[in-house]
Amino acid sequence: MKINKISKLIKDEEGSAIIEFIILALPLFIPLVIYLTSVNSSAQIQYEARNFARQIARVYVTSPSQESTTSRVAALVDAFSKNSFPENGIDLPPTVQISCSMNPCISPNSRVVVEVVLTSTKNRNSARAKAIQTVDSWRNS
Image (cartoon, rainbow, N blue to C red; front, side, top):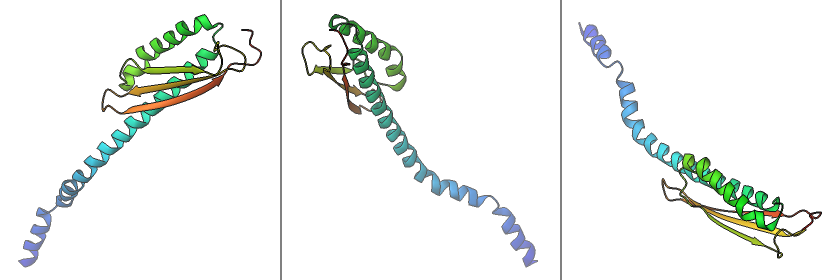
């Protein structure tokens, strides 16, 4: 008779280990998911800032003339603002600062430094990136 009671108790507790695991483990996994989401967001905005700065510097130094640099950079900013920034939750307009080692900037061997600051609309993280490009030596200015 006692064996029947014990086997009945064992049968009644089937699945309780799964429920206990869920109750104990779930509060531990929620902070982990929040942390990983935050790290991913920070990494994404940093990647976007580096890519954006590099592309602006590249567009700037490959411009055919000093007069066309403004329109080319504006077109690139517009392309990023329409495609990449909304997908990644980046605040508009981005902050862009361009400085040159020579005047005019599009001179042979001139160094162009582009600094970019992007801010996330989701968690207000910001990322700063810097890209340096050199105008080619054989350019006719």
